[in-house]
Length: 426
Image (tube, rainbow, N blue to C red; front, side, top):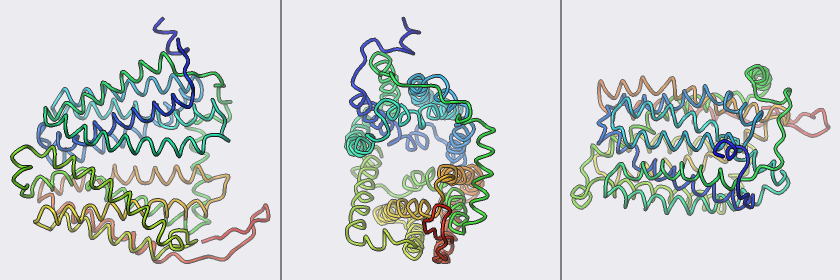
């Protein structure tokens, strides 16, 4: 019976409701796990700055290597099966990290849940599209984002409350929640319209090679594509150190009396919650107040300014000695990154031909991942040999050329596409 549940649910549920429950519970569990994960590594496990960065590097490398093999399972056998396997592995990885407070345990957890994440990556959206059709998924995606945002706020508060009991509890709860979710989906998740992806359309290493060649050809023709690949690479070189070491930097500062007396758990839950609210409000305000700049065909000046704000925010966190001033700098940096992301995405999409768009966007993400794998360990080693502040300052300096790359981009000459549309080559 257990084997049959991997392929067919016993009590098939409504597809859309199942999709909402799946994403909301995943968001709850991921947020429970991640809110205090870095604090746990730095305090309970006692990882050094270099070890903190290596943990992130291992996770990025695992996701990079397993994305294609696990995608084959989803395309060839079953979206549902791939999602169930992924949830069990991610949940197991979360449990392993929470229950084994050693460097080896944390590293092993990254491998387990990183592989699990690649099983779910793309499979959930592909399952929904198979079941209800691509024409109907737009409003459902929008509603899911709203529900997941609410789940994030609830989970951050929950992580803070559970962390007061023991900092490992929210991580264990997140892992157990994903395992239970997998069990519920095995009983209820329908898969009525899945058809094996034809061999010519499957994501294989050979296909990845061909797509990569097509993407490189597009990058050679388009200055915008080349520039964004460079921006993603530079961003990756810088971001791994910041993502892993900002927690350590905050712990180095003098905590206010009430937080210091209780533990840093409440403080870091509050930092996450406030940062999320600030980033969300910044995105909304910019979208309403300055839509002309946000929607501009070539918003290079705006992106350059946002990049400089991010650099200044990282330097502020690294060098300012007052906790609240340093946190403001970090929140401003996060808000700038949140505002910049959709502008960059829109600009890149407008300058990529449809037939290679998915490939170029994938290459853009992979360039960031490669940057993180390459740039993280040296900056982590620098933090070990000198200080976390020095490593964060170096991370900001590595990021700074992005402003110049954005500022140098200019509108190109409009040329006709093969279909007769106008296309700007830049």
